[in-house]
Each structure stands twice: as C-alpha cells, then as structure tokens.
Amino acid sequence: MNIYGFAADINGIIGYQGINYQLDQPFKDTLEALDQALIGHLEVTKGKWGIYTDIQYVKTEEEKQVYNYPIALSTTVNLSNAGIYYRAFEQFSDGTGWIIEPTLGVNYTDLEGTLDALGKGVAVEKHWFEYFGGARIRYNSTSPWNLAAQYTHGTEQTQIAQAYLGYRKAVFSTPVNFRVGYRYVSQDYSDGNFKWDTVQKGPVVGLGFGF
Image (cartoon, rainbow, N blue to C red; front, side, top):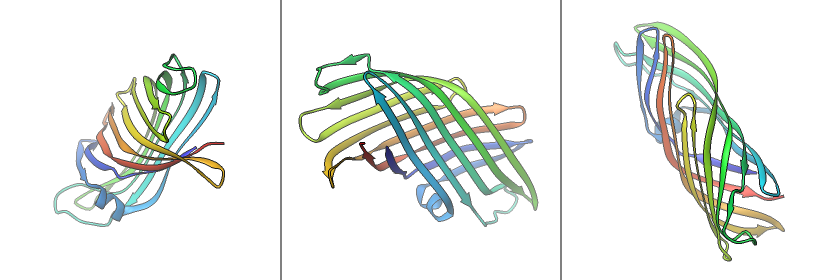
C-alpha cells in the first residue's frame, strides 16, 4: 500500500458548449483552493502476477472574478485505475537487478465542475472509462535503495508516466519504502460539446507499506 502527495501543476483547456476555460494553475494555487484530496495506491502480488488500483481524487473551490473571462468556481476530479501485471523479465532470481512487468487495465475519470462567464454559471459533469496498456520497470539492489517507473497509454488518450527513487527501512518491524519521484498525467478527451485537454505534472513524495 502506498500513500503519496502529488504537487501538481495543472494546465490545459476545459471546454463546454462553446466556452473554453484556459487552465494555468501552479501547485501553490491548487493548494490554496484545495478542499478535499485523497491519493493512494494498493497492490497485491502472488508469484509473478499482481493486481493494483490507484486513486487520485482532488476537489477544489475557488471564489474569484476575472472580467469577461470564464472561471472554474469548483472542480472535482476523480482519476482512478485498476490493472494487472505479469513479471515477464527478472534479471536475478532473488529479486535484485532489473524487473520488467507489462500491464493492462482500465482507467476511470469522473469530472464535475462549474464554469462562469459574465454571471452565467454552467455545470459540467462527465465521466468515462478507457482501457490502457503499458509497462512497469523496477530495479532492486542489495542496498535499501531502489528504482521504479511506469508508463501507460489509454484508448481515450490518457497518458500516465511516473518514476520514483525509494529507500527501504523497517519501522516498528513493518517494511516501509520512502519514495520521491515525478508524475505526469496527460488527458485529451472530447465528447460532443465537451473538451478536457489537460496536463498535470509535478513531484511526488510518498510512503509504501509492505504486509
């Protein structure tokens, strides 16, 4: 189980019914508008097979006015996935060295937001599923240091890339992996009069617990 914080810069376009809102929100603005956040990762392995789920839920509330320009008063973004992987390559049988694991799964994106222009509010709700494929790469050494990276590409153009440097240490007899890294999430989805073309990117800090 991993729990992490994602210091995301968000930029792109939210479009609905001919209104386009240009997103350009650095992490400090996201933090100021933050109302609720839940980010986590759960993984179960048996032999060379494994399953996992990842949840990134962020809700922001804003109260600001920009003359003659649409603004997002509130946004709720739930980006979650579930996947399966197989350990196709293992450099050494003791788990050290390079490990390559192809992965397949499903992404789920659920968006709720409010756009405002000249006093007119427009509520936006959209959700979609998509299949994805990709690969996980890990490197374990005989020291506590370790590396991990993953890239997936979805059928609706969601791309998620992430890489981590970890340090394993037992805390009260529980194995803990302290991790720092970088996460990149790109989505380019359109459906009729709705468009969601955004990039979230930034550093990640987290803890992984083994049971």
